Image (cartoon, rainbow, N blue to C red; front, side):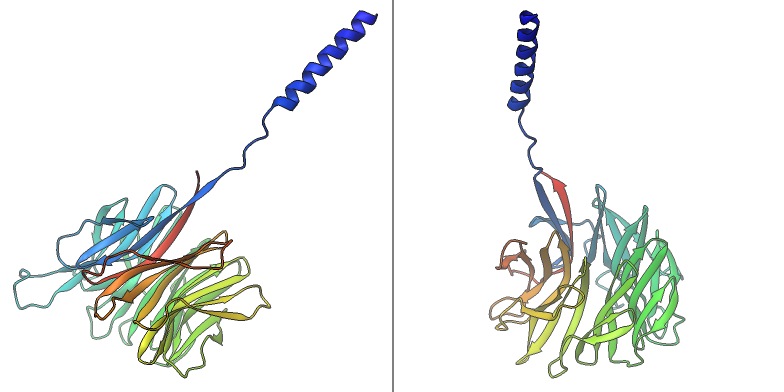
Length: 353
């Protein structure tokens, strides 16, 4: 009996020791891949974590205007210059729409099979690629939506119209732009927020049942939430809101405000539904600068844009970042200022280290 008890105690002790010796699982570590689309000189560019890649194109002027990541695939969109009779001819250039998937280029044209386009934004959902922009084949630009390269018109050409931003939520496709005033199309049905020809919408973001649109009314940077306008600036200086991102109940908007004839890159933030707007100057106003795009993940903030080189008319592509646990901003030049450049769009992916 005693032997049996002793054996039982020995087994129990061994089990306790074995459990105690097991290492507790490590906390997972994550890194953030920052993808930026833009241009440098005449070349469309994609920067990943600051490392530049020149995107394929026909060798003439081209730019990348938007970037989107879906799974392991990196998409970029933009436009490329084409000449009907050779680059040295007097004929003015036209533009063809392009997008890249993992660096491989595809081209598309307008409904007439020609090319005089601008492509401004990109969204990928369920394997479908949505692009928006405008077609200039008529007297007035026509707002356009392309789904998997197939063109659809959002306006009839009777009024000036452009599409600047696209967001897909479930089965609904939202497009923000200009239709002789601030315009939002939902599934190609137009809603007018203003009838002011000096106003336009430049970005749309959907969070739950709420639709956020930003742009300008005359000289005033403005946010519309579900169609209700809220001024971000007082109108005393020219200001423009170019991009909006919503994370939880927090709203992040970037753009610029002009002061003393120079543009200052701006960030407007509202934390929580009852919070107040906070304004952050991303640049000091000594050189002209604009903020073009914003992305937020895990409270890390990423902003892209451009800033003039010192005593020069050349723009430098810029990336401003603020870590969640920091009060300071990191400023990174993506180009060296030898030729004109701009960072137009940013998308950030979180992955396990």
